[in-house]
Image 1 (cartoon, one colour):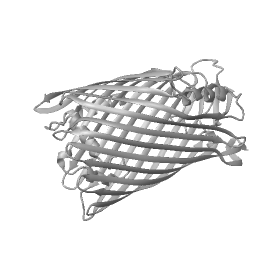
Image 2 (cartoon, rainbow, N blue to C red):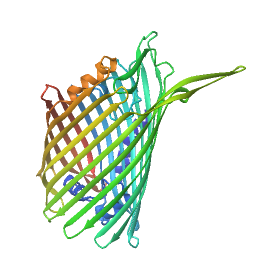
Image 3 (cartoon, rainbow, N blue to C red):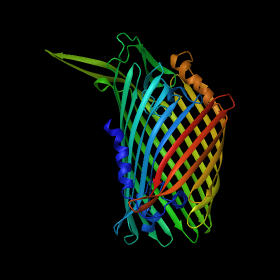
Image 4 (cartoon, helix red, strand yellow):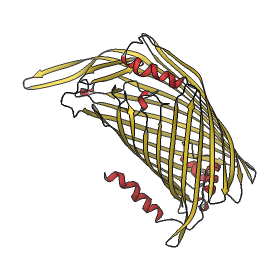
Length: 512
């Protein structure tokens, strides 16, 4: 329970160090939109985004959110209630360093979730497990991000980024599971600037560890069937199969990013290419290995800003492609006895190379025109396009699922009463291009309970509306004036096959 009050402690610490500056949502949003390097892997780029100490800024807020509806997939659950606390800060540190730090805490409860007792269910490692009985799941996550960048040293800026996340996912119904997460990434980087041109290079090591520590029941004779999945419709269920079951996923991921930036008169651009390769080992009892998961990631992004004084054009695009596959192992349990001692281990007898395969593509394009007044955003309009495709395949015998869809968005926002009332909204229209399912055996429990019902989700076209209203008010605490805010927001989604989803939320916090 003590962890749940960490957010309150940090909030108090942040508000106790507020700076005597008038930071509003309109100014904060302009600073965010002018950034180029914030979304890249290169932490040294922080120095390019922060020109001087006048860019020191921060925000802290609590968020309460409720989501419900039947537009969902079977394994992700239905109704969600969530509490979140988030804070971030950009700060010039002394004469030689720029810093960025953020803390994100979220906790909540999901209802009517089944068939998945892991954190990553879709388009990921196929060796997962779960119960067919729906239940409630509680989650709690803590995420820390930190970046440091040096001032210009000759032609160079140096930087380092660190990300650390721990999490917990607990099922509240028999068979009861608990999954713990430890996830961190270290990314050193540097940039080289000559005139208007900058080259950036970064490399990272990412380690992900997810562990299901065991399954328990409170019923004396539950008679529950637990399922172990190996890809597509292949899921083996057995009554009492949760007894002494545990699983561990350990991923080691290496990669890097090469960037080129240009800064001219009123025009700035950043273009990056990235590569990454990961190997994820899966372990069970006595170091049993069902298989190994390999990923290859390729990315390209471009971020462009055209600054015309009272008009700021933002033109962004990105492409991310992932190729992944899983080798499947067949093993037998070896037992040896040496007097009173018994030793057991699994011996691999056969390997099926690339038995499960995944190809995934994400393409995004975004244009926004912001109207600037007195170094603040007065309003904005924009359009966005997203394309997502995924191809999951199991060999042999062959089963395959192909999905693809595009989302078109129009957005806008306006400061109705400057520094006091901000309204923004968006309208999305999603078109399903493909929702094909071809199973070798469509009669399995998993196929009938999960894969086939999910095709209604993938095949749906929908429209979605979003509206948010933010009220700001200055507040003076111990002689320091800061801008506090309260935000109300909501979404409504409706599909062409009568599925729907609605979201409502309330945020309150402070700019400092």
